[in-house]
Length: 527
Image 1 (spheres, one colour):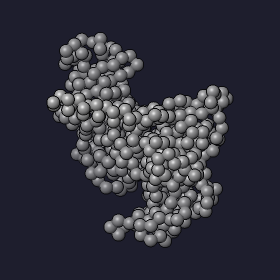
Image 2 (tube, rainbow, N blue to C red):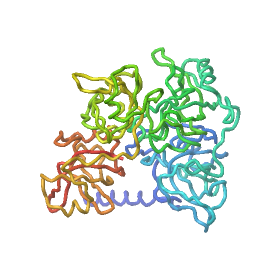
Image 3 (cartoon, helix red, strand yellow):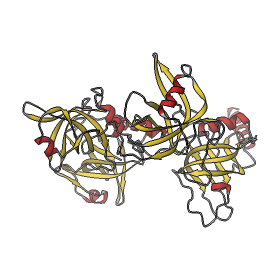
Image 4 (cartoon, helix red, strand yellow):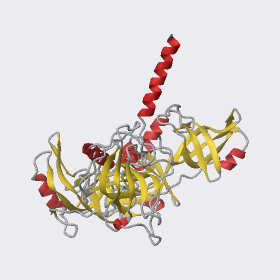
Protein backbone atom coordinates (compact mmCIF):
# COMPACT_ATOMS: atom_id res chain seq x y z
CA UNK A 1 0.00 0.00 0.00
CA UNK A 2 2.85 2.36 0.87
CA UNK A 3 4.49 1.55 -2.46
CA UNK A 4 1.28 2.54 -4.32
CA UNK A 5 1.06 5.78 -2.32
CA UNK A 6 4.66 6.69 -3.10
CA UNK A 7 4.03 5.99 -6.80
CA UNK A 8 1.02 8.31 -6.79
CA UNK A 9 3.05 11.07 -5.14
CA UNK A 10 5.84 10.64 -7.68
CA UNK A 11 3.36 10.85 -10.57
CA UNK A 12 1.86 14.00 -9.08
CA UNK A 13 5.26 15.65 -8.79
CA UNK A 14 6.11 14.67 -12.36
CA UNK A 15 2.84 16.06 -13.65
CA UNK A 16 3.39 19.34 -11.80
CA UNK A 17 6.91 19.57 -13.20
CA UNK A 18 5.78 19.13 -16.81
CA UNK A 19 2.77 21.42 -16.60
CA UNK A 20 4.80 24.20 -14.96
CA UNK A 21 7.29 24.41 -17.83
CA UNK A 22 6.96 27.36 -20.21
CA UNK A 23 5.87 26.58 -23.75
CA UNK A 24 8.00 29.43 -25.09
CA UNK A 25 11.76 29.24 -24.36
CA UNK A 26 13.59 32.22 -22.87
CA UNK A 27 15.15 34.38 -25.57
CA UNK A 28 18.45 34.34 -23.68
CA UNK A 29 18.88 30.76 -22.50
CA UNK A 30 18.22 29.77 -18.90
CA UNK A 31 16.24 32.35 -16.99
CA UNK A 32 17.87 33.58 -13.79
CA UNK A 33 15.73 35.14 -11.11
CA UNK A 34 17.27 38.56 -10.40
CA UNK A 35 16.34 38.15 -6.71
CA UNK A 36 18.82 35.30 -6.44
CA UNK A 37 22.12 37.08 -5.89
CA UNK A 38 24.09 33.85 -5.58
CA UNK A 39 25.81 35.15 -2.44
CA UNK A 40 26.70 38.41 -4.14
CA UNK A 41 27.07 41.51 -1.99
CA UNK A 42 24.04 43.75 -2.35
CA UNK A 43 24.62 46.66 -4.73
CA UNK A 44 22.62 49.80 -4.03
CA UNK A 45 20.43 50.98 -6.93
CA UNK A 46 21.63 54.28 -8.39
CA UNK A 47 20.59 56.57 -11.24
CA UNK A 48 17.27 57.73 -12.58
CA UNK A 49 17.43 56.21 -16.08
CA UNK A 50 18.18 59.45 -17.88
CA UNK A 51 21.06 60.13 -20.22
CA UNK A 52 22.58 62.35 -17.56
CA UNK A 53 22.24 59.76 -14.78
CA UNK A 54 21.77 56.22 -16.14
CA UNK A 55 20.42 53.41 -14.00
CA UNK A 56 22.95 50.93 -12.72
CA UNK A 57 21.88 47.31 -13.19
CA UNK A 58 20.38 47.04 -9.70
CA UNK A 59 18.21 50.11 -10.33
CA UNK A 60 17.20 48.89 -13.81
CA UNK A 61 16.06 45.57 -12.34
CA UNK A 62 13.97 47.39 -9.73
CA UNK A 63 12.48 49.52 -12.52
CA UNK A 64 11.33 46.61 -14.70
CA UNK A 65 10.04 44.64 -11.72
CA UNK A 66 7.87 47.62 -10.83
CA UNK A 67 6.41 47.54 -14.36
CA UNK A 68 5.19 43.98 -13.88
CA UNK A 69 5.67 40.84 -15.95
CA UNK A 70 5.80 41.43 -19.73
CA UNK A 71 4.90 45.11 -19.43
CA UNK A 72 7.10 47.20 -21.71
CA UNK A 73 8.24 50.64 -20.56
CA UNK A 74 6.59 53.58 -22.29
CA UNK A 75 9.89 55.44 -22.54
CA UNK A 76 13.54 54.83 -23.29
CA UNK A 77 15.82 54.45 -20.29
CA UNK A 78 19.60 54.55 -20.00
CA UNK A 79 21.47 51.75 -18.16
CA UNK A 80 25.18 51.41 -17.45
CA UNK A 81 27.13 48.28 -16.59
CA UNK A 82 29.95 45.93 -17.47
CA UNK A 83 29.46 43.11 -19.98
CA UNK A 84 29.63 39.71 -18.25
CA UNK A 85 28.40 37.49 -21.09
CA UNK A 86 28.16 37.88 -24.86
CA UNK A 87 25.51 35.62 -26.34
CA UNK A 88 25.94 37.05 -29.83
CA UNK A 89 28.40 39.78 -30.78
CA UNK A 90 27.39 42.32 -33.38
CA UNK A 91 27.29 40.79 -36.85
CA UNK A 92 26.37 41.91 -40.33
CA UNK A 93 23.57 39.37 -40.85
CA UNK A 94 21.10 41.13 -38.57
CA UNK A 95 23.16 44.10 -37.42
CA UNK A 96 22.32 43.51 -33.74
CA UNK A 97 23.73 41.76 -30.68
CA UNK A 98 22.77 39.97 -27.44
CA UNK A 99 24.71 40.30 -24.22
CA UNK A 100 24.29 40.61 -20.46
CA UNK A 101 25.56 43.39 -18.20
CA UNK A 102 26.08 43.55 -14.42
CA UNK A 103 27.30 46.14 -11.93
CA UNK A 104 30.70 44.41 -11.75
CA UNK A 105 32.51 41.67 -13.62
CA UNK A 106 31.51 39.20 -10.90
CA UNK A 107 27.97 40.50 -10.48
CA UNK A 108 25.20 37.91 -10.29
CA UNK A 109 22.29 40.24 -11.03
CA UNK A 110 22.28 40.78 -14.78
CA UNK A 111 20.30 42.76 -17.33
CA UNK A 112 19.98 41.44 -20.89
CA UNK A 113 20.60 43.60 -23.94
CA UNK A 114 18.33 41.63 -26.27
CA UNK A 115 18.87 41.94 -30.02
CA UNK A 116 19.67 45.63 -29.85
CA UNK A 117 21.40 47.91 -32.33
CA UNK A 118 24.90 49.31 -32.48
CA UNK A 119 26.32 52.74 -31.56
CA UNK A 120 24.21 55.65 -32.74
CA UNK A 121 21.12 53.38 -32.95
CA UNK A 122 22.43 51.95 -36.21
CA UNK A 123 22.78 48.42 -37.52
CA UNK A 124 26.26 46.97 -37.34
CA UNK A 125 28.27 46.83 -40.58
CA UNK A 126 31.71 45.63 -41.62
CA UNK A 127 33.20 49.12 -41.42
CA UNK A 128 32.59 49.33 -37.66
CA UNK A 129 35.88 49.33 -35.76
CA UNK A 130 34.58 48.21 -32.35
CA UNK A 131 32.62 45.17 -31.20
CA UNK A 132 31.52 44.21 -27.72
CA UNK A 133 33.34 41.79 -25.41
CA UNK A 134 33.24 40.62 -21.82
CA UNK A 135 34.70 43.29 -19.55
CA UNK A 136 33.60 46.27 -21.66
CA UNK A 137 31.87 49.10 -19.80
CA UNK A 138 28.77 50.10 -21.73
CA UNK A 139 25.81 52.43 -21.56
CA UNK A 140 22.69 51.15 -23.30
CA UNK A 141 19.41 52.87 -24.08
CA UNK A 142 15.96 51.65 -25.01
CA UNK A 143 12.62 50.35 -23.88
CA UNK A 144 12.79 47.61 -21.27
CA UNK A 145 10.62 44.71 -20.16
CA UNK A 146 10.43 42.11 -17.36
CA UNK A 147 10.21 39.07 -19.66
CA UNK A 148 7.94 36.35 -18.21
CA UNK A 149 8.43 37.96 -14.82
CA UNK A 150 11.91 36.46 -14.63
CA UNK A 151 14.35 38.10 -17.04
CA UNK A 152 14.99 41.88 -17.06
CA UNK A 153 15.89 42.85 -20.62
CA UNK A 154 15.59 45.44 -23.33
CA UNK A 155 12.69 45.05 -25.70
CA UNK A 156 13.71 43.28 -28.90
CA UNK A 157 14.83 45.73 -31.59
CA UNK A 158 14.05 48.76 -29.40
CA UNK A 159 17.43 49.42 -27.78
CA UNK A 160 20.93 50.40 -28.79
CA UNK A 161 24.43 50.82 -27.40
CA UNK A 162 25.17 54.41 -26.38
CA UNK A 163 28.86 53.99 -25.56
CA UNK A 164 31.54 51.34 -25.22
CA UNK A 165 34.24 52.13 -22.67
CA UNK A 166 33.25 55.77 -22.77
CA UNK A 167 33.38 56.08 -26.55
CA UNK A 168 30.54 56.00 -29.00
CA UNK A 169 28.26 57.79 -31.38
CA UNK A 170 25.85 58.94 -28.69
CA UNK A 171 27.49 59.33 -25.29
CA UNK A 172 25.16 60.44 -22.51
CA UNK A 173 24.86 64.17 -22.23
CA UNK A 174 23.08 65.90 -19.36
CA UNK A 175 19.72 67.40 -20.13
CA UNK A 176 17.52 69.88 -18.28
CA UNK A 177 18.53 72.70 -15.98
CA UNK A 178 21.91 72.23 -14.31
CA UNK A 179 24.23 74.12 -11.98
CA UNK A 180 26.95 75.22 -14.35
CA UNK A 181 27.69 73.57 -17.66
CA UNK A 182 30.43 71.38 -19.05
CA UNK A 183 31.81 74.43 -20.87
CA UNK A 184 31.42 76.68 -17.81
CA UNK A 185 31.48 74.46 -14.69
CA UNK A 186 31.24 75.59 -11.08
CA UNK A 187 34.52 76.36 -9.36
CA UNK A 188 35.30 74.67 -6.06
CA UNK A 189 34.39 77.87 -4.19
CA UNK A 190 31.08 78.17 -6.05
CA UNK A 191 30.22 74.54 -5.39
CA UNK A 192 31.11 74.86 -1.70
CA UNK A 193 28.90 77.92 -1.40
CA UNK A 194 25.92 76.00 -2.83
CA UNK A 195 26.60 72.94 -0.67
CA UNK A 196 26.86 75.00 2.51
CA UNK A 197 23.51 76.65 1.67
CA UNK A 198 21.79 73.24 1.69
CA UNK A 199 20.07 71.87 4.77
CA UNK A 200 22.05 69.26 6.73
CA UNK A 201 21.86 65.93 4.90
CA UNK A 202 20.21 67.52 1.86
CA UNK A 203 21.01 67.00 -1.80
CA UNK A 204 20.72 69.60 -4.56
CA UNK A 205 17.65 69.40 -6.79
CA UNK A 206 19.74 69.90 -9.90
CA UNK A 207 22.81 68.17 -11.21
CA UNK A 208 25.98 70.22 -11.19
CA UNK A 209 29.21 70.41 -13.17
CA UNK A 210 32.16 70.97 -10.82
CA UNK A 211 35.75 71.55 -11.93
CA UNK A 212 38.75 70.84 -9.71
CA UNK A 213 41.99 68.96 -9.31
CA UNK A 214 42.40 65.62 -7.61
CA UNK A 215 43.97 65.82 -4.14
CA UNK A 216 44.03 62.10 -3.44
CA UNK A 217 42.11 58.87 -3.96
CA UNK A 218 40.77 57.40 -0.72
CA UNK A 219 39.33 54.10 -2.01
CA UNK A 220 41.35 51.02 -1.04
CA UNK A 221 41.97 48.06 -3.34
CA UNK A 222 39.49 45.76 -1.61
CA UNK A 223 36.56 48.15 -2.05
CA UNK A 224 37.59 48.97 -5.60
CA UNK A 225 37.57 45.28 -6.53
CA UNK A 226 33.97 45.12 -5.30
CA UNK A 227 32.55 48.27 -6.89
CA UNK A 228 34.97 49.61 -9.57
CA UNK A 229 34.27 53.18 -8.50
CA UNK A 230 36.40 55.69 -6.61
CA UNK A 231 36.10 58.02 -3.66
CA UNK A 232 38.44 60.98 -4.03
CA UNK A 233 38.98 64.57 -2.96
CA UNK A 234 39.16 67.57 -5.28
CA UNK A 235 40.25 71.13 -4.61
CA UNK A 236 41.09 74.20 -6.67
CA UNK A 237 44.84 73.49 -6.83
CA UNK A 238 45.09 69.75 -6.07
CA UNK A 239 46.30 70.23 -2.48
CA UNK A 240 44.53 69.65 0.82
CA UNK A 241 44.13 73.39 1.44
CA UNK A 242 41.07 73.20 3.67
CA UNK A 243 38.65 73.70 0.78
CA UNK A 244 38.01 70.23 -0.60
CA UNK A 245 34.99 68.37 -1.92
CA UNK A 246 34.64 64.59 -1.58
CA UNK A 247 33.55 62.85 -4.77
CA UNK A 248 31.67 59.83 -3.45
CA UNK A 249 31.49 56.51 -5.37
CA UNK A 250 32.36 58.21 -8.64
CA UNK A 251 32.49 56.59 -12.07
CA UNK A 252 34.84 57.39 -14.93
CA UNK A 253 34.34 59.24 -18.19
CA UNK A 254 30.74 59.23 -19.39
CA UNK A 255 29.77 56.68 -16.75
CA UNK A 256 32.33 54.01 -17.63
CA UNK A 257 33.86 52.08 -14.74
CA UNK A 258 37.39 52.89 -13.60
CA UNK A 259 40.01 50.21 -14.30
CA UNK A 260 42.04 50.74 -11.13
CA UNK A 261 42.67 52.99 -8.14
CA UNK A 262 45.54 54.63 -9.99
CA UNK A 263 43.28 55.84 -12.82
CA UNK A 264 43.17 59.14 -10.94
CA UNK A 265 46.22 60.79 -9.43
CA UNK A 266 47.00 63.96 -7.58
CA UNK A 267 46.97 66.94 -9.93
CA UNK A 268 44.58 65.43 -12.49
CA UNK A 269 42.09 68.08 -13.62
CA UNK A 270 38.50 66.82 -13.69
CA UNK A 271 34.99 67.99 -14.35
CA UNK A 272 32.53 65.95 -12.29
CA UNK A 273 28.82 65.71 -13.06
CA UNK A 274 26.49 64.86 -10.19
CA UNK A 275 24.29 66.23 -7.43
CA UNK A 276 25.76 68.29 -4.59
CA UNK A 277 25.33 66.85 -1.11
CA UNK A 278 25.80 68.24 2.41
CA UNK A 279 26.86 65.21 4.43
CA UNK A 280 26.76 65.75 8.21
CA UNK A 281 27.97 63.36 10.90
CA UNK A 282 28.78 64.17 14.53
CA UNK A 283 28.16 67.85 13.71
CA UNK A 284 30.91 67.76 11.09
CA UNK A 285 30.02 68.86 7.55
CA UNK A 286 31.62 67.04 4.63
CA UNK A 287 30.86 68.69 1.26
CA UNK A 288 30.26 65.98 -1.32
CA UNK A 289 29.24 65.22 -4.86
CA UNK A 290 26.70 62.47 -4.27
CA UNK A 291 26.84 58.85 -5.37
CA UNK A 292 25.87 58.36 -9.00
CA UNK A 293 28.29 60.98 -10.31
CA UNK A 294 30.71 60.54 -13.20
CA UNK A 295 33.42 62.39 -15.08
CA UNK A 296 32.72 64.41 -18.19
CA UNK A 297 36.33 65.59 -18.53
CA UNK A 298 39.72 64.30 -17.37
CA UNK A 299 43.06 65.96 -18.07
CA UNK A 300 45.97 64.03 -16.59
CA UNK A 301 48.28 66.08 -14.39
CA UNK A 302 51.80 65.46 -13.13
CA UNK A 303 50.88 63.69 -9.91
CA UNK A 304 51.93 60.22 -11.05
CA UNK A 305 50.60 56.88 -9.86
CA UNK A 306 48.24 58.16 -7.23
CA UNK A 307 48.95 59.36 -3.76
CA UNK A 308 48.62 61.99 -1.07
CA UNK A 309 51.93 63.80 -1.50
CA UNK A 310 53.05 66.82 -3.43
CA UNK A 311 56.56 67.64 -4.60
CA UNK A 312 56.27 71.36 -3.80
CA UNK A 313 59.76 72.77 -3.16
CA UNK A 314 61.30 69.35 -2.49
CA UNK A 315 64.67 68.67 -4.14
CA UNK A 316 64.69 65.53 -6.28
CA UNK A 317 67.89 63.69 -5.36
CA UNK A 318 69.44 60.24 -5.44
CA UNK A 319 69.81 58.33 -2.20
CA UNK A 320 73.58 58.85 -2.33
CA UNK A 321 73.09 62.62 -2.56
CA UNK A 322 70.51 62.48 0.22
CA UNK A 323 72.95 60.63 2.48
CA UNK A 324 75.62 63.25 1.75
CA UNK A 325 73.32 66.19 2.59
CA UNK A 326 73.31 68.03 5.90
CA UNK A 327 70.69 67.26 8.52
CA UNK A 328 67.71 69.62 8.42
CA UNK A 329 63.99 69.57 9.15
CA UNK A 330 63.53 72.62 6.92
CA UNK A 331 64.88 71.10 3.70
CA UNK A 332 62.71 68.58 1.88
CA UNK A 333 63.99 65.90 -0.48
CA UNK A 334 62.15 63.68 -2.95
CA UNK A 335 63.49 60.12 -3.18
CA UNK A 336 62.51 57.22 -5.41
CA UNK A 337 63.58 53.67 -4.70
CA UNK A 338 62.66 50.07 -3.94
CA UNK A 339 61.18 49.04 -0.58
CA UNK A 340 63.28 46.54 1.40
CA UNK A 341 62.99 44.93 4.84
CA UNK A 342 59.40 46.05 5.44
CA UNK A 343 57.77 43.89 8.13
CA UNK A 344 54.24 42.54 7.72
CA UNK A 345 51.69 44.53 9.67
CA UNK A 346 54.04 47.44 10.39
CA UNK A 347 51.80 50.35 11.44
CA UNK A 348 54.49 53.01 11.10
CA UNK A 349 56.10 52.24 7.72
CA UNK A 350 59.73 51.62 8.68
CA UNK A 351 61.86 50.15 5.88
CA UNK A 352 64.98 50.54 3.77
CA UNK A 353 64.69 52.47 0.50
CA UNK A 354 67.20 51.50 -2.15
CA UNK A 355 68.17 52.87 -5.56
CA UNK A 356 71.18 52.27 -7.81
CA UNK A 357 73.27 54.73 -5.77
CA UNK A 358 72.69 53.39 -2.27
CA UNK A 359 70.26 52.69 0.56
CA UNK A 360 68.72 54.68 3.41
CA UNK A 361 66.44 53.88 6.34
CA UNK A 362 62.95 55.43 6.26
CA UNK A 363 61.76 56.11 9.79
CA UNK A 364 58.01 55.97 9.27
CA UNK A 365 55.87 56.95 6.28
CA UNK A 366 52.74 59.13 6.45
CA UNK A 367 49.97 59.26 3.87
CA UNK A 368 50.43 63.01 3.48
CA UNK A 369 52.62 65.80 4.82
CA UNK A 370 52.03 66.18 8.54
CA UNK A 371 49.51 63.32 8.50
CA UNK A 372 48.53 60.95 11.28
CA UNK A 373 51.03 58.34 12.46
CA UNK A 374 50.40 54.59 12.76
CA UNK A 375 48.26 54.62 9.58
CA UNK A 376 50.78 52.95 7.27
CA UNK A 377 48.59 49.86 6.79
CA UNK A 378 45.97 52.15 5.22
CA UNK A 379 48.57 52.99 2.55
CA UNK A 380 49.38 49.29 2.18
CA UNK A 381 45.71 48.46 1.64
CA UNK A 382 45.18 51.32 -0.81
CA UNK A 383 48.32 51.06 -2.93
CA UNK A 384 49.66 47.57 -2.26
CA UNK A 385 53.01 48.79 -0.90
CA UNK A 386 55.25 45.82 -0.12
CA UNK A 387 58.84 44.67 -0.32
CA UNK A 388 59.91 45.16 -3.92
CA UNK A 389 57.55 48.07 -4.59
CA UNK A 390 59.08 51.11 -6.25
CA UNK A 391 57.80 54.22 -4.48
CA UNK A 392 58.45 57.95 -4.31
CA UNK A 393 58.50 59.73 -0.95
CA UNK A 394 59.39 63.18 0.43
CA UNK A 395 61.14 63.76 3.74
CA UNK A 396 63.90 65.45 5.73
CA UNK A 397 67.51 64.29 6.27
CA UNK A 398 68.05 63.10 9.83
CA UNK A 399 69.93 60.47 11.83
CA UNK A 400 69.75 58.38 14.97
CA UNK A 401 72.77 56.90 16.77
CA UNK A 402 74.88 57.71 13.75
CA UNK A 403 72.51 56.02 11.27
CA UNK A 404 71.15 58.21 8.48
CA UNK A 405 67.35 58.30 8.26
CA UNK A 406 64.55 59.87 6.25
CA UNK A 407 62.42 61.72 8.79
CA UNK A 408 58.87 63.18 8.56
CA UNK A 409 58.47 61.22 5.32
CA UNK A 410 55.21 61.14 3.42
CA UNK A 411 53.97 59.19 0.43
CA UNK A 412 53.90 60.58 -3.12
CA UNK A 413 53.29 57.68 -5.49
CA UNK A 414 53.87 54.04 -6.34
CA UNK A 415 54.86 53.01 -9.83
CA UNK A 416 52.59 50.69 -11.82
CA UNK A 417 53.90 47.41 -13.09
CA UNK A 418 56.56 47.07 -10.42
CA UNK A 419 57.84 43.50 -10.04
CA UNK A 420 59.80 42.54 -6.94
CA UNK A 421 63.30 41.26 -7.63
CA UNK A 422 64.00 37.59 -7.04
CA UNK A 423 65.55 37.06 -3.59
CA UNK A 424 69.02 35.59 -3.33
CA UNK A 425 69.02 31.80 -3.61
CA UNK A 426 65.60 31.70 -5.34
CA UNK A 427 65.25 30.60 -8.98
CA UNK A 428 62.65 32.44 -11.09
CA UNK A 429 61.30 29.84 -13.54
CA UNK A 430 58.27 29.01 -15.65
CA UNK A 431 55.60 26.59 -14.51
CA UNK A 432 56.77 24.04 -17.08
CA UNK A 433 60.32 24.17 -15.74
CA UNK A 434 59.02 23.92 -12.19
CA UNK A 435 57.02 20.81 -13.07
CA UNK A 436 60.13 19.27 -14.63
CA UNK A 437 62.30 19.97 -11.59
CA UNK A 438 63.18 17.41 -8.92
CA UNK A 439 61.29 17.37 -5.62
CA UNK A 440 63.10 19.24 -2.87
CA UNK A 441 62.31 21.30 0.22
CA UNK A 442 65.75 22.90 0.01
CA UNK A 443 65.43 24.46 -3.44
CA UNK A 444 63.20 27.54 -3.74
CA UNK A 445 61.47 28.67 -6.92
CA UNK A 446 59.68 31.92 -7.82
CA UNK A 447 56.60 31.45 -10.01
CA UNK A 448 54.27 33.99 -11.60
CA UNK A 449 50.91 33.06 -13.08
CA UNK A 450 47.14 33.47 -13.09
CA UNK A 451 45.00 32.20 -10.23
CA UNK A 452 42.11 29.83 -10.93
CA UNK A 453 39.89 27.45 -8.93
CA UNK A 454 40.36 29.45 -5.72
CA UNK A 455 37.34 28.88 -3.48
CA UNK A 456 35.63 31.72 -1.64
CA UNK A 457 36.68 31.93 1.98
CA UNK A 458 39.59 29.49 1.60
CA UNK A 459 41.74 29.92 4.71
CA UNK A 460 44.77 28.09 3.30
CA UNK A 461 45.18 29.48 -0.23
CA UNK A 462 44.83 26.40 -2.42
CA UNK A 463 44.48 27.11 -6.14
CA UNK A 464 45.83 26.41 -9.62
CA UNK A 465 48.59 28.66 -10.98
CA UNK A 466 48.82 28.96 -14.76
CA UNK A 467 51.28 30.71 -17.07
CA UNK A 468 51.88 30.39 -20.82
CA UNK A 469 53.83 27.16 -20.30
CA UNK A 470 51.50 25.16 -18.08
CA UNK A 471 49.64 24.81 -14.80
CA UNK A 472 50.47 23.60 -11.28
CA UNK A 473 48.56 23.16 -8.03
CA UNK A 474 49.53 25.46 -5.15
CA UNK A 475 49.07 23.74 -1.80
CA UNK A 476 48.55 26.77 0.42
CA UNK A 477 50.11 30.24 0.49
CA UNK A 478 51.61 31.90 3.58
CA UNK A 479 52.02 35.65 4.04
CA UNK A 480 55.77 35.18 4.53
CA UNK A 481 58.34 32.38 4.50
CA UNK A 482 57.53 30.02 7.36
CA UNK A 483 54.52 32.10 8.39
CA UNK A 484 51.35 30.99 10.14
CA UNK A 485 48.87 28.81 8.26
CA UNK A 486 45.15 29.50 7.81
CA UNK A 487 45.82 33.23 7.34
CA UNK A 488 45.20 33.39 3.59
CA UNK A 489 42.05 35.50 3.93
CA UNK A 490 44.17 38.23 5.48
CA UNK A 491 46.17 38.30 2.23
CA UNK A 492 42.90 38.38 0.27
CA UNK A 493 41.69 41.37 2.27
CA UNK A 494 45.01 43.20 2.06
CA UNK A 495 45.87 42.63 -1.60
CA UNK A 496 42.58 41.74 -3.29
CA UNK A 497 43.76 38.27 -4.33
CA UNK A 498 41.11 36.56 -6.49
CA UNK A 499 40.59 34.24 -9.43
CA UNK A 500 41.97 35.86 -12.58
CA UNK A 501 44.63 37.86 -10.75
CA UNK A 502 48.31 37.45 -11.59
CA UNK A 503 50.27 36.40 -8.51
CA UNK A 504 53.95 35.83 -7.74
CA UNK A 505 54.86 33.26 -5.08
CA UNK A 506 57.94 31.40 -3.87
CA UNK A 507 57.86 27.73 -2.87
CA UNK A 508 59.32 24.23 -3.13
CA UNK A 509 58.63 21.50 -5.70
CA UNK A 510 56.56 18.71 -4.11
CA UNK A 511 53.83 16.23 -4.97
CA UNK A 512 50.93 14.28 -3.47
CA UNK A 513 49.51 11.05 -4.87
CA UNK A 514 51.50 11.65 -8.04
CA UNK A 515 50.17 15.21 -8.53
CA UNK A 516 52.83 17.96 -8.69
CA UNK A 517 52.38 20.74 -6.12
CA UNK A 518 53.97 23.96 -4.95
CA UNK A 519 54.54 23.40 -1.24
CA UNK A 520 55.68 25.73 1.56
CA UNK A 521 54.67 28.62 -0.71
CA UNK A 522 54.64 32.22 0.45
CA UNK A 523 53.33 35.44 -1.06
CA UNK A 524 55.45 37.91 -3.03
CA UNK A 525 53.10 40.16 -5.03
CA UNK A 526 49.82 40.35 -6.94
CA UNK A 527 48.90 42.39 -10.01
